[in-house]
Amino acid sequence: MTSNRRVVLLAGDGIGPEVAGEALRVVDWLDRRRSVGFDLSEAQVGGAAYDATGHPLPDSTLEAARAADAVLLGAVGGPRWDSLDFSLRPERAILGLRKSLDLFANLRPAKVFDALSDASSLKADVLRGLDLMIIRELTGGIYFGEPRGVETLPDGTRRGVNTEVYTTPEIRRVGAVAFELARERQGKVHSVEKANVMESGGLWREEIQTLRDADYADVDLHHMYADNCAMQLVRDPHQFDVVVTSNLFGDLLSDISAQLTGSLGMLPSASLGAPGPGGTRAALYEPVHGSAPDIAGEGKANPIAMVLSLAMLLRHSLDQDEDAELIEQAVGNVLDRGLRTADILQPGFTAVSTEDMGRAICAELDRLAA
Ligand code: IPM
Ligand code: MG
Image (cartoon, rainbow, N blue to C red; front, side, top):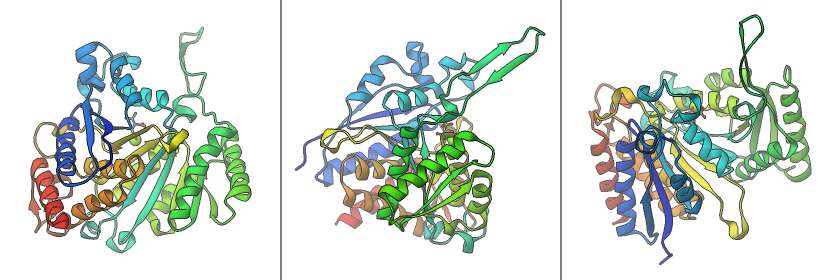
């Protein structure tokens, strides 16, 4: 038996608590049936935390996240909090967690399950068997660069500023994550920037190439402009294995890659810090979808992205690859049997609720582990 691992669950807002409930169902299954033991606690984040404490990321939540082996997050945000000052918006909690825990590498896999290859708005033959990984730099770039802000000019008009900035170490550490991962996959990396118009993009390209030549000569490296990458992702996504890019371009490109899989409701993510002594690293796992306030509380949300985020947690933070694969297999089998939440429902399939989907995944886990 391995000792219990500390996981903090931050359910958050909107559909966050609903999908978190289904992840908990799977955690409970793992607790009963597998060797990994969870020491799971919950804390508040986002709008819910703001309502309770006046801040979207209370110190107690940040402390709990710091002390944990991994954080599992549902979603934050909603129209109720949209008029708050920028510094108090629920989204600041996610950005605060990323920055405070130095989670610089965001892994966003886009894998098309066979059963869903015709669920996307794109043609099935373009998508069948697709398995790519976007690695988004997560603690730098224009999201955090200084100067930033809005100022009023002498003539009364206003000026808004954000700054794209990257340094050598920031580029190299996320590049290394991409090259390492490519070695375990198909050995191919596309580095994406706008070196044709941005100095920071030119630096990005040079540093990634230097890193590859020095330490990863066995990996096949391609450079691509971000606008072309957006187009290539919908034209011929099979050309990609690992894509590494900046914070802002990664935000955009990962939404595109999400749609390739049929629904944003299918996509998990991992945000990782640097490996520390003993190989542990700070890590946060969350579905790529947001809080979807329009369907919150209706049992319509797809819990698969959240359940697959738990699988990523098992793989990347707890070294439980076998359990991760079991969960991914169970999700695939449930989809093969035709069960669909509203976001991926097509004629001829069985519509199920959030809870039904969670229960079906656990029933399938029972079968697989029997
Ligand atoms: C994402 C989201 C976030 C981002 C928001 C909610 C702050 O879009 O994780 O992709 O822009 O990074
Ligand atoms: Mg986004």
